[in-house]
Image (cartoon, rainbow, N blue to C red; front, side):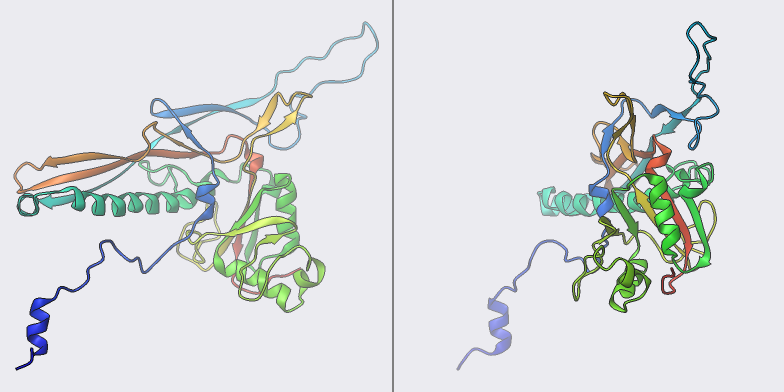
Length: 327
């Protein structure tokens, strides 16, 4: 008699692929573009020019006759200190499972990969919405660092209205030729829509937005336009915006590279947003017994923060609704 299907099943082994197929993939291209800097100790201190607009407060250089009075003044700077924040996570593994399995390495490899990813998920959210004043355990993100102490042109609000191209260009001019624009997918879609429908953007700058059917917007005015899934469409129009609570969004204009701003040899530089971290970066503590429990704990740490040494390297346009863009 032929084998039955049940008997065949008993003699075969189903294919099992190790790993996890992620259903949700969130993109944040800015993370691969921001420079990383290692820091010894628990904080970084730097001097930042106090006035972001005119130098009139301390610039006394003037033309004078030979032998005339020589003016004097001292540049005004402000010292800024940023403390590295401790980003942590952990996982428990039963000692019984380890003893039965014999080799814990497959468990560690699987667990460590996902847990380090979880650290990066939390970090990328704080990269925009972290607020050390609201939560002393986290670092301040771009929204908090780009605050209302900046020039007006660097922090513009649409006041719960559609994205206005004039405001966008005004902010970009204040940053002095940004390296990129950054928004969520909804606002990027509105920019693409304007081109396809021949609206304000499509008519005026059709050569500056490189799109093709089925592709998202690539640039505006020759400047790359990137999309981050960590920028929400639920921001409040405040300073700084809160991640959820309303139906607004923001667009950032960011200058990434350090570039000379003064002097023939470029002795003074503006520096864009920079991620600082402890020398070891994200690290893992080997499994340790948990007192009173029949498990071991694997702990994950990352000491990290964000700094903006030069204010004029980041601009923000906030309070943008999902409506079609305006002139």
